[in-house]
Image 1 (cartoon, rainbow, N blue to C red):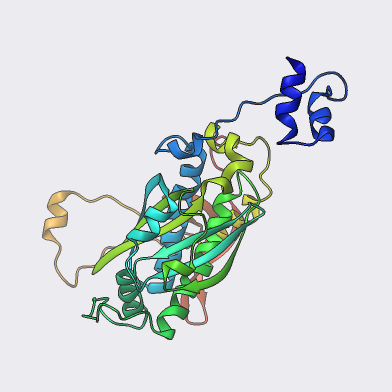
Image 2: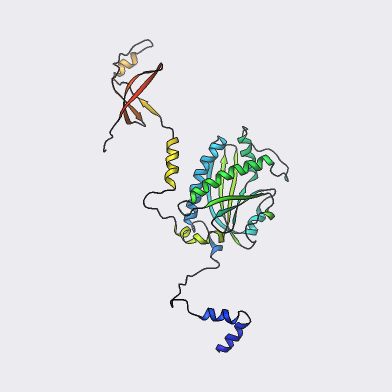
Length: 321
């Protein structure tokens, strides 16, 4: 029986390969992990919670970036991740299209950003001061060089926001490789391979469209376990987020106010007030500087360079400190 098996194997593998397969691993034990070859074809919403968390975080930060770029309030929502055959997805893309191949280093393979051309037209019109309306265009009319450059500008910012969103899972650097208008030249997987389509809906006051991030299923294989299990909260100080949060906090605007004095009058006295009436007050010696109703500093009221001013004397100790 063994001789028959050996003879049958000779046509497929060499004697050396057969011997290597029959030898025991070093140490006498080998670690075997189950692997479902068809598993990548059954990825649906909720199966990769960490990947969804990454892209929901990206949607929030990308909304702020688009607002800074367009000076209009956009809405960016993550629809979710779905699996699809690469050939079926590209076949549904209308041409001419806006497709940008990118790398997510160090993950294997390439990914694809797919911009809805109608959304590009709306954003370009808004960027250059227009009302953000869609203009009638010929069906075969592709993006102009200016529109292509604008797409690159938006995607460079998207790459920064997406890299930052990946930080809790892995250090990922996103590099734009090339822009294409024909899906035939923008394939990132074989037609029968599974890709993960991550769709972001972008709505402007005058309309909207979709931005897809298409990732081959094999791209996430090195991180499949953590993406399936979810993001585990890190203990201690996060060196990646700390500087970014500190920078944004330093640039945040805070409204402060100073109350010189307060006094009570009756409703009857208030009703009798008329233009020209004077309410006598005593100018306080020391006043407090407040932010959001919270007293922060003690100061002295005065005048500086012809303007009312407050000189900070000392920070106030808050309750519980």
